[in-house]
Length: 216
Image (tube, one colour):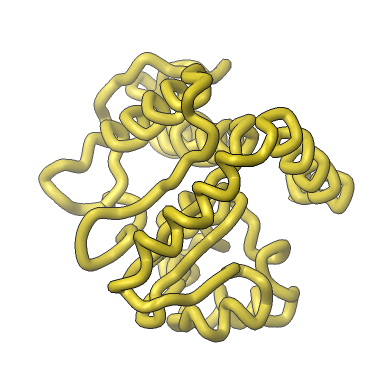
């Protein structure tokens, strides 16, 4: 589960990888049975009221009341961080096994490529909580609108096979072949010109923005 500590550790890793010229591609993966269970809403490690040194132009959240506390924190730690990582100048690959639920979608969706295992699934069940999707709202860009409505309104699991049909997943492999496949893909990216990778990524991200993704 994602808490603030994990978010800032991830940001540290993205910053380190971005600043190291020897790093030419970034792989984001989960270690264990699943990729991500989403945001931490109930474990002993939940750190909702812990202050971190903010990375973005967002004020601290711990001294804010009620909804303002949540909104301020999520502007920094959720949507703000996701936009920041999406714009990393190096190509990124999400390596997804098992569950990729709610906040886990944000981690996968900010990556340029997604490789999933044949037993992976994607789910955003937060409509049951009265919430219209996770804060990095990319549902209607990752999926056709009617399918995005089904995904959110019903909150059911979507298999990697079905996600691939909509272009949300680039490649499906077995668990045994996941790391090898992603490593080969990363090696191909690493062998290509650094600036070319950056400009290609930037150009396609810009097309998404022209389509209204950031405004959405």
